[in-house]
Image 1 (cartoon, rainbow, N blue to C red):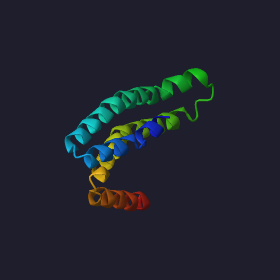
Image 2 (cartoon, rainbow, N blue to C red; image 1 turned 90 degrees about the vertical axis):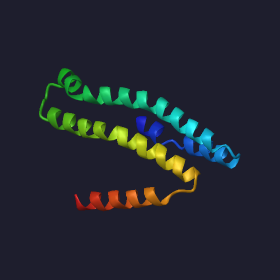
Image 3 (cartoon, helix red, strand yellow; image 1 turned 90 degrees about the horizontal axis):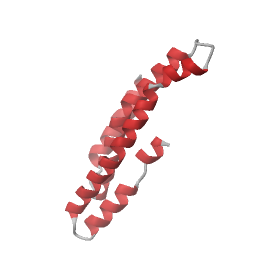
Image 4 (cartoon, one colour; image 1 turned 120 degrees about the vertical axis):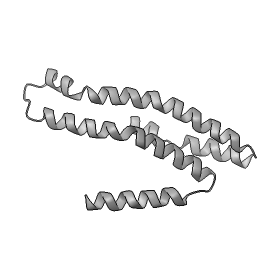
Length: 116
């Protein structure tokens, strides 16, 4: 559910409309609002993912996968701030027709992911 909120494209629509109407400063305000809304949601998700190991330990008798599940959730948890930042900045820049930085970043990320 948190991924749906982070990857939502509402900011791009609002920022593009603001820029198209000749109010680019309002696009910045929409960006700030989107970060203010997504940051607490991301924090709650991070806290819940940090509790993966204790919750699984309480609910599951077989502890063989508990450590792996906790590690997986901690790695994903560390990515949430970057996902929020990347998603919101890319939408703001795309509304301003600035796409080269994020196209290059996505390409580098793809190559690094393939190499790892």
